[in-house]
Amino acid sequence: MTVKALMIRILVLVLAVALSACEKSSLPAESREKLTRDEMLAAGSADAGPILNEFFLPSKGATDARHELAGQLRLRSSVMRTEPAVIEPATIAGKRTQLFPALAVLFLSHDGYLIPVERDISFSPDDASFWQIQVSPGRVWSEAGDGDMSRASFPFILTSNIENETYNGVATFLYDGTQVSYLRY
Image 1 (tube, rainbow, N blue to C red):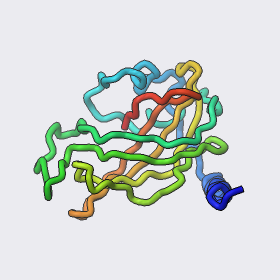
Image 2 (tube, helix red, strand yellow):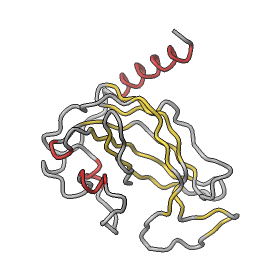
Image 3 (cartoon, helix red, strand yellow):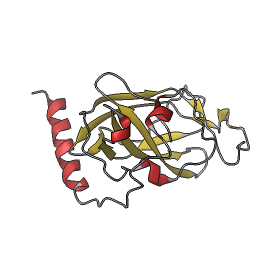
């Protein structure tokens, strides 16, 4: 076993023990009104407004994830829908304030938890986004309405090294053994 593989196993064990103390919050309705399978697989989002955090949690009747997850999630930077619709100023120090940052994070699932292997603040000097991102451990599960896919969600923090700002968010996606849906946050 390589040192890296051993370190990952130790990290998973430590995080699993730490996360076992986390309580499940109240669950949304059994039938999903937002972030449905069809919405998650569609290229565009029909919902123009903010989505309540409860829709990023397992619904009533959720079961264990159908699939293990061990892989890298890669996102290109993308324009954010925000409230208000336009963030002012549009650029700060040449970086765009309404651009969600590019992200490449390695995740592992273990006993219902989604564990990022690295939890450092992530940023690319070449990215046009004003924001840096940091991901935290989340959850994995399955819902009847998702067909043969599993669902994952994780909290994240957007920060800036230029100004003293921090914003919290939650992201979710569907996955199976061969594909990953669009990420919604």
